[in-house]
Length: 280
Ligand code: ADP
Ligand code: MG
Image (cartoon, rainbow, N blue to C red; front, side, top):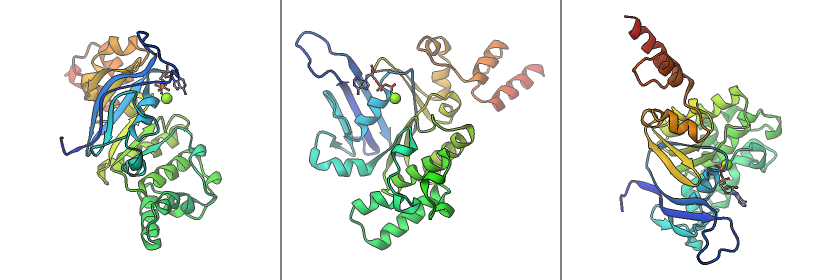
């Protein structure tokens, strides 16, 4: 086994169909997916509604178990029920709605919830909570009531609760989708610093192309399968295919193509540079 692989999907199939009949293919929500998440990866997962993204995320830490194939976390298959807690400690999950993830009435108590369940010593819990709150830029809010915070701040508290468990990988399922632009920015820069500063592997599911270009690797899902994967540049070059599955390419990419600029452009800055170079 490649020792840098934290999370491994090996030809994974999952169906929500309760009864499957021999000879009749069930409706696969995830269908033959193989994907390795290595230490330090920063991966964006894109796909139209119903393409299997949430199912994939829930398969990653034993919320769902594959019907065929195998998901393993640091070599432990998610079918090993005795290891479910260990698996969830290694791979943490953040969902879309922060209100459904916050359990306590004081910020720091909420962040302490996970480490307390690990049975750690009080000093260790204190340290982890403080470190996690600092990592998401919410330390000054530690004594506040979560419901008084903005959506972006609540989502950062939910992220702090996960990183206080010190996972090696964090999976975020459209965790910016319900936020306003300011909240999105806060959460994206928090996610980026988990990756850049703490070395955590990050898998984030998003609809936002400008968020996706921040990743090192982009995976596009369609009908439960991986349709495209590669660097943002490699993936977004497939404009027609991406649009066929109901997704957009980044506006900067589109603009530079319309202008007939040959450079492969992903961001507004690159677009401006391509225009300037074209003028010279
Ligand atoms: P995405 O997150 O990309 O929108 P999902 O993983 O939620 O996709 O859904 C993949 C497929 O599984 C879709 O066909 C969807 O209708 C189906 N599905 C998702 N959740 C359930 C569920 N709880 N029960 C039955 N079918 C589901
Ligand atoms: Mg979803």
